[in-house]
Length: 449
Image 1 (cartoon, rainbow, N blue to C red):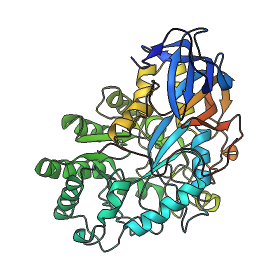
Image 2 (image 1 turned 90 degrees about the vertical axis):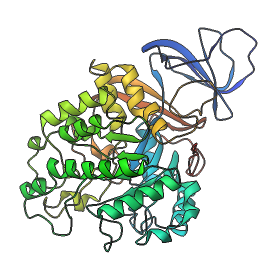
Image 3 (image 1 turned 180 degrees about the vertical axis):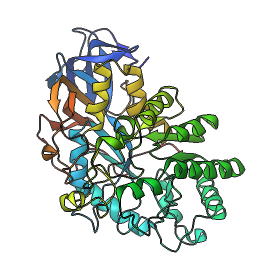
């Protein structure tokens, strides 16, 4: 049951905000309900006229009231790469896309390898954010020098075997093992980018790029980490699984809480052969695969071998992405497309409501132990999105992200966020941001260790 604690009776006190007569998902089906919000929390889900008065009321007739999406894999840039994205534009993009919580990766410039570096991120994020922001940390060259002051403020450690945060680091079996031990010691997950190919020498053609970052390389990387995890028994999370064989390997070693995985919308829905690759619009790591990989990833996601969907939002400038493929950096903007695209799959009958809510809301909250998030129920944080059903076309020029080029350009979507609420505050409404930056949500977002 997706919505619980539906309250009956009369005599309720006034709420701060009431979302009235929207469609809430109960036992997998949309039913008309009203949601009351007080002090940043969901006060209750109400039937018919049995709803408290609100200091503010939003008429949601015909629209869907859903938990805000949680994206556990984003790159918000900022710091020395504000030309690509900053905490303001990135979290505006999240709010406009129906995403109420994001977790930011440590491969910023400078990388997040110490409490001082993390503290600067936190400070800037608090001033600029429109949604909840959490963070991951990196591991220094000498693991003994790991800054433990970061631990209470991060959700995990992230490593990049193909492109380490520090050039002198080599991901040998011993390095992987020691990284896992570090994560286990601090009771946080180790996340990794599954690839064994070096990025030091740039491929000349897109075919060389795809060959270098092949499914065979991805599978080899996952196999190495799984083998070592069996010795260490830490929590391990596989980022952006892109290949059928990778998902098969994860499924064969499935461990509900200690081996988890994510997949992106572009690896579920796009194929390499659909693009000319004359520029970098569809260049990402891991790269796009085949239609068979798409289909198999959907199957493994629906079978719970893959836990959730995440965007890997990795913005770059227009000039960088419009350059020839071999020069363009890898990564695309995703915060404004994930929710509309997956809800379109729901409206087209390809996904159930229960599946969507698991992939984008409760699933990521469970993996990263996010406290009181991801479910529309009394007592949980009022992180909510109101969705209008209709028909629109994705146009990158309308993005709030600084990155305007998208491989989903022109795609028809049947869902659009019209209100986004973070901890009870309306941060986005019909293309406007009613409150300024640095007001709504938490930085860093709380977790349960």
